[in-house]
Amino acid sequence: MGTAVFVLLWWIALFGWWVLLVGTNAGLELLAGACAATLATALAVALRRRGLLNYRFRARWLATVLKVPWRVLYECGVVFGALAMHLAGQRRLSSRYRAFDFPAGGNDPESRGRRAVAAAADSISPNTMPVDIDPEHGVALRHELDPRRSSNAMP
Picture 1 (tube, rainbow, N blue to C red):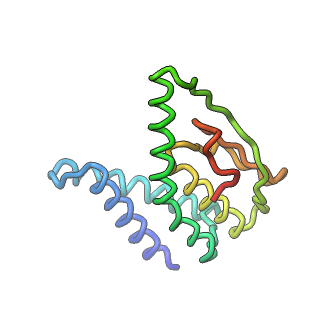
Picture 2: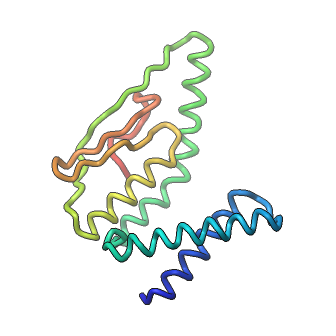
Picture 3: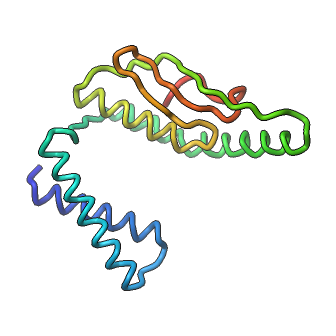
């Protein structure tokens, strides 16, 4: 992909994300979004030149992301249920960190893409938060608010 197309796509995506997040199309917000998108796009170009934006994705990894909305709904119920039980004095809430096997691969674009998809999909759910993925040891670490009802693997 040429540099001009790369810059254009990044700028449009980042500017659109800004407008979506602020929820308004007021002139000052649009100007702020344009400035933020320009700075972030310049950073993306610098990272690309250093070879740090080389990711490759497989369709089956992206297909696992389709399960995320249902997981978010389920884990919202888990979090609200745990909070209600804690406030009612029925059960003390005790979160924990947990490490589990995750074949993270090496430093190639495909492995980096797999780690990015897994971490992004795992961070959306309210009950779990990925902390680190160690490619050398094939282990992922995450924080779980209610460990009794979390899944045993990253997406």
